[in-house]
Length: 251
Image (cartoon, rainbow, N blue to C red; front, side, top):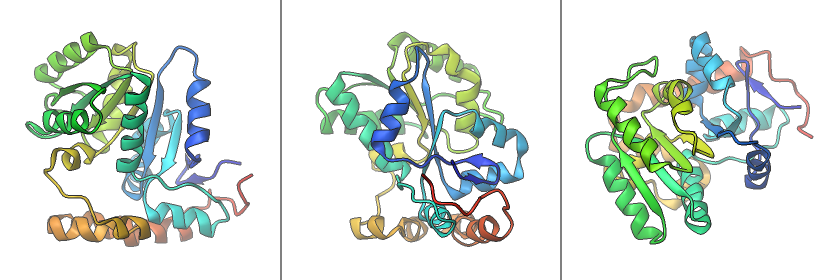
């Protein structure tokens, strides 16, 4: 049985399971959401966004808070930060000869992120677009329309969308049909900022114990509200307010 948090199914499998699911897709893109506490709290608040997240094909466990909540309820899942998941996709794309499209980030971020990935994986073929202004419903402006056109001509196999939630999931829902070449698509939030060097990544020991949020707070104190909701509000609501997580070991 797949667990649910606030009515959102969380598959939370390991890489081999994700690959099996991806390979089972027949001539359509595989949409992955790296589910974290912020995404799930937004889905709890906004029913239309919850429906968007449910329409994805697979949801990974991103965030130690979500992993811990599921573990308390008897589910053993694999935790992938959005960053780690995106990097695994890049490594795989370079090995398979897949073309990667990047969309989003502030001015210049996508280009610098693409350059960093080309340096790390010389065989990787990447096309980056900043996109235009994206509204909360996922719609974009003329600059975004032009960016989508250029990206479509590039014909990516892998598409990373970095507008932050809930915009990136709604953008994917709205425009994915314009990219028939795409085999896998995922919203990556601030990943491109880290690859571009705009934000430094937490030390490895922080990553291992699941407290990257401390490092992020040190760099960006203005995120205190978001971090409070993810670290404190989410587990309390998920454990004591959500009645849709059955206490049964995942089999």
